[in-house]
Length: 390
Ligand SMILES: [Ca+2]
Ligand SMILES: [Ca+2]
Ligand SMILES: [Ca+2]
Ligand SMILES: [Ca+2]
Image 1: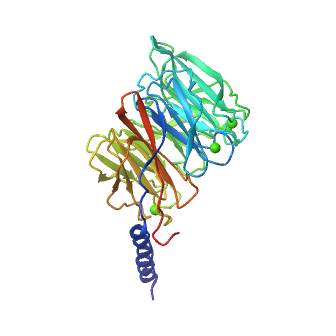
Image 2: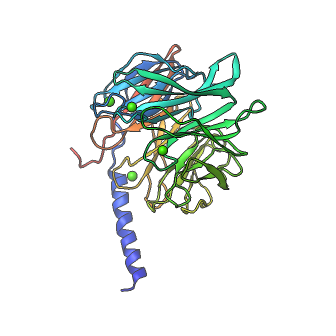
Image 3: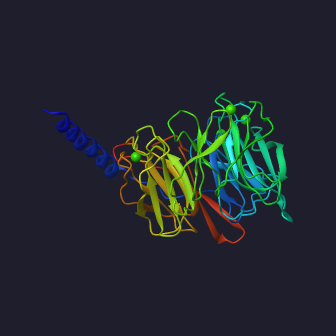
């Protein structure tokens, strides 16, 4: 039997197991409200903020000046910590994500966040970057690491100089003569402090947080910016970036990176408001990408997350819609293509994913707004796993 034949048989066997998992997957239990929070909040991310081994959720209000932690108990329940001030306001506040970046910047096992935004609402030219170190009780110790003129577009964490200490990349568009235009990199010292920033000037700064991953195949972290033009920036491994290539993102509302076909090269997923679609761009691992493959999802996409929801080893995509149009799961075949989406009710707008109850695969959190005009509800959708699981 020749090699091609073997590949064909293997492909059939593999796709059988994929479709079996997809058919057996039971979706989610009916949503449970775990907390009432600010009107028009955003679920900024999932991490263990109090070091107890259970995943927690960072939530902020639409202006980004207030935040709170939902502390998980590992069984899918959450209790809200105190509301805290972040020390910044987000100009394009709204619902756009990208000003908060999660990490453990002082390496104490409790997750932290970094945030960038304007200092006062009356002066939209004066920006500030802060780091908030988790104390473990739902509150944070805040440190300013930079302030100055400019127009901050996004904050992302990564290790840009390969010393295993987390750094920050902040994209800045100039608003005033002399203001930085490009990527400001703050190299972390591992204790929650950072070196003075180094600017890599770039023509493009994009919208929202840059996507951090090795896109060029040299094991050094690069950036992809959500904008048109030279938006793949290659990292030099010392904290500098330079325009490398361009990948057409088609005016995406939201962009994220993941390896969708399991070949070790980072791919991109975009959520689009125009066209109501999710697009997949498979990476070649050399900074170039396949043309976008679009999937119609029927509504404007406001947030994305990736995880393996049906536990078949293939990465899937969670898609949130604005406002309370629920969310969808696009199950992956493992080769970078996806089944038609399965739609689930409850909330929308913002999505956070984690195994909150430590059972049956990743769960989903969404935000339901407008039921009570002064409050939004955080809904938890627990994964029901496969039919034959107990
Ligand atoms: Ca926790
Ligand atoms: Ca920490
Ligand atoms: Ca570093
Ligand atoms: Ca899967």
